[in-house]
Image (cartoon, helix red, strand yellow):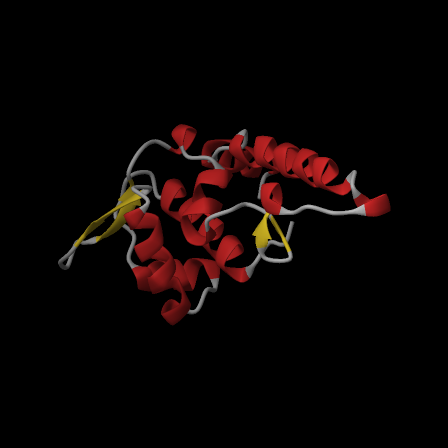
Length: 138
């Protein structure tokens, strides 16, 4: 699995919005809080809103809030919203790859790896990560 800047920045942004506790957070505030270039952040927020993970509000008191509670948004949800598949093999979905000869066992292995990764990402919510922050005192 390759964690891209899009994945990393999207999860960071979602955590910052979740941590704001329902207060609308602007793109500029997110960029400053998480040290993410604002020009890079805008398309990510669009993708997250389109995936119905965020709600946006225009105006002076506008910004972004979570579309549902932090307990109901997984890291996997966020990552899929900005890139589609969680993992791929040579840019293709894991279930579409076939091999011949000695490598014929690889597709099953890749699918197992993909499944395990998906379970971890889908089983970890924004709330889980925020609670870990509180536990570590950070």
